Length: 347
Image 1 (cartoon, rainbow, N blue to C red):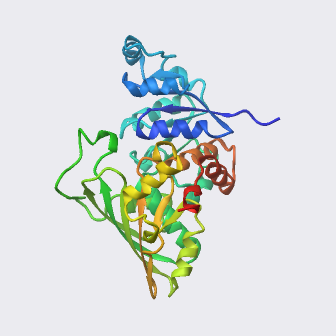
Image 2: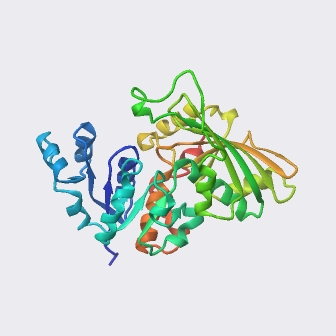
Image 3: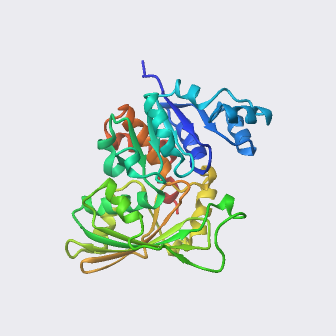
């Protein structure tokens, strides 16, 4: 007889939360026991339409949500009684306030990259730190950009090629669905400090990484664009560098010659392939742009800030619960359920 499905709660049904909920529902070893939120708008109605039980963050919001005509099953406190793991996808700094509740209720929990490493004492990227998360009470899935940094540099490190890396990030200004209320126009906004936070954050996953990042906010909403200059440990060929990067199942290769010339064209590929919400779970790296000069490598890639952390979150659930102690097995299972890699085999 197969083991019972892992019971997962999602606190916060926003940009990340709704994608996590869908991804959990797609796994054959997990189930969503409910989602919690404070909103009363169309998003909660979509959640109910998808068959998720809806809970209010607290009793005050329970009244407001019911007054809005929503079918609410109770409060977050009650939802936690039915969950083995809660994935907190609430806005930045809210999750840190929820940590005490989760610990008091003795429910394992995952926070997102907007929170500090200290909130859980462990930072998660599946291909780099899965083993350290097995059996823990909590972990933090790092931010979209940090996830991409760790995925790519870990692949080079595994091949013995990584000496140090320096990256420049062109960061989208806001999420697409909020572009009517925020963001920037007709300007570029550099982050005030060098290094930007992604490099130090990557070191919370792997302290041995020699990485520095710089970032600038740009007036677009689709995704982030990274440019990297990497000092290798020795002279290498382009084929060697590509072979190292191919050891990550979550790095996908695209090419300009096939018409994937910009961020929007890659998102269009996701839409044409039928990915839910046009999600790009992979790091989309331009293969024909990658260049190697002696012991230096240069490359560029795209990061979907709304989707890249979703497979990491699924793997983190299995790690915390010890349902799957082998990271490679969990990664393969998650990849298969989400179709990771599939669109790029035909692009």
